[in-house]
Image 1 (tube, rainbow, N blue to C red):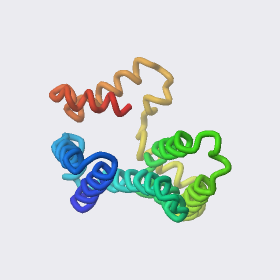
Image 2 (image 1 turned 60 degrees about the horizontal axis):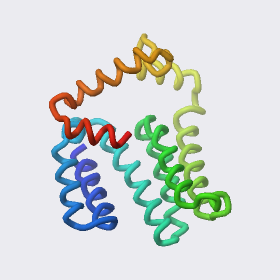
Image 3 (image 1 turned 90 degrees about the vertical axis):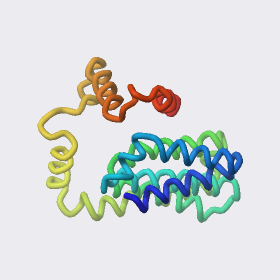
Length: 193
């Protein structure tokens, strides 16, 4: 996690420096490195930090591809985002964000742009890899293990369609990451949503 934590700081610095200034990049790295979720994820040997690096890397590649017009980077952005699902299945939740980046940039030209289709091709290749390695050898085993790993013997709050349980789950996460002790981080989290 330490290696990926440092890689994430490097990516944040590089993207922020390109978008703004070096001073803003240093501030972004400082704020990220001092945040409770970052220090927890970087401290434990979990895949959270690897997922963050893959996803942020995919966004950075897509940004560079759009800015430079480099078609290879579009393909790599889609591939890296899809491979993030292999790191952690929550990577699926980030794919619409990358798609949104393409939609907001290309607008009505979206389906006519080669970069869009190359990003989709990279994504399809990455998801095909995931299917071939994890699901197709034994679908029943995969889905049973996934259900047990993610939910245990209870139903996840999102699938209950009960707003009270959704709110309770959000409050539990906020307590877990110490947002009650740090209103600035809570505000940044809210803005990020």
